[in-house]
Length: 152
Image (cartoon, rainbow, N blue to C red; front, side, top):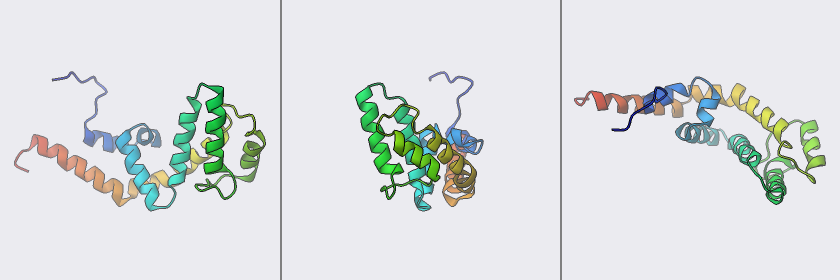
């Protein structure tokens, strides 16, 4: 049996922990999957997709890939009428548009912060009240109890 460190969380505890803050959801694959499902049901999955694309972009090391990924993110999320256009203010969009020709690893930071705040203040609280989260939470707890109480 593998030794579990003091930070180990059972699946039920993980689902409960997601309510602590949005970062716990974004850094947990099951939590992220549930949050994405919720956002899809609200037709706003572009927000988390943009945030994840930015996280991936920041890890890019090659200058060629920086330019290529930046253009992809720009055309997918930033430019007017983009397929997954995110809701950001004109000045942020304009700033990115003016600098996309020579992108840096921080070129989307301001937009990413805006989208993170939007999700944290708007989508995340609704997610925690959603049937998707409640069902997942209940199923995780019931599943966990069955391990300990075989007669359930």
